[in-house]
Length: 297
Ligand SMILES: *[C@@H]1O[C@H](CO)[C@@H](O)[C@H](O)[C@H]1NC(C)=O
Image (cartoon, rainbow, N blue to C red; front, side):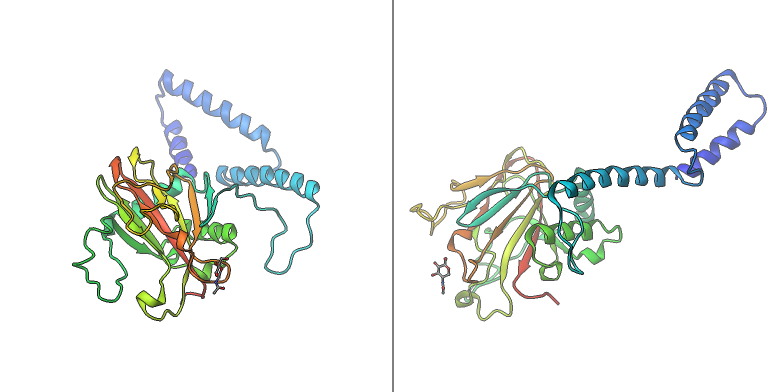
C-alpha cells in the first residue's frame, strides 16, 4: 500500500505547472526520503514494511539475547523453544485454581474478534441436564454468542491467540474447543454454573472440560463481573445472581483469566462454580476457550 501511494506521488510531481505548495511538499518529500536513505544505505531493496519488521526483529533479538545471557537457557527438544516466553500472571485463587493475565491481548486483537462475531450472534444456549428443557432453563443464560474455529479466521489472528493460550496453560492447542464469543448487553447475565459436565447429571462424557480461558474483549462500565461464589457461603447452592457475591473479578479490555474446573486428579472442583453478573452499564464482550482433557476432533 505504501508503495502504491509513493507511485502516485511521483506521478503528481511529474505534472507541469507545479504551484508553490507542491514545491514545498516535494522538498519535504526528498528531505524525508534522504533521511531514510542515509539510515538504510546498505538495504536499498527493502520496502518500509520490511524495514519495520527487521527493526522490530532486531529489537526483540536484543531483548532475547539479554534474557538468554541472564538465564543461560538449556538446549530445547524438537518441539521446544530456544527463547523464553514471558506471560505475566497473578494467582487469583487456589480453590478454584484461577489465574489473571493482564494485557493478554492487544486492543486490535479484541476488536478483530468482536467484528468477526457481530454478524453471526445468536441467543446463547445451554447444555441440558436430564429432565431439563429449553423452556425450564430460560433466563439462566441471556447473552448472545457464536462459535468460531481459528481455522475459519483467514487473518491468522485467532491462531496466534490460540497459540498463546496453549503456552500459558501448557495444554496443546488440539485440546481446545472452538472460540465461543459472547456479548452481554445491559441486564444480561449467566447464572452460577459449572463448565465441566458431571456424568451423574449429564450422562457419560467422552471428554471433560478441564479449564476455561476467558478473554475480555471490551471494557464494561458497571456490572458484568465474573464471580466465583464462595464454597462456605450459605448461598453457595442456591446462588443469587442478583447479589453476585463471592470472588468477583472485573478485568479490562485485553485481559484474560483462566480457571480449572477439575482437580489434578480429574474430579470436578466444586469451587469452579461461577457466574457472569448482570451488566448494568455498557456492553460486555468475552471470548471463551474451553479446554478438554482429550484431543478435540
Ligand atoms: C481429588 O482431589 C481432591 C482435591 O485434592 C480431593 O478432595 C478428592 O477427594 C480427590 N478425589 C479422588 C477420587 O481422589
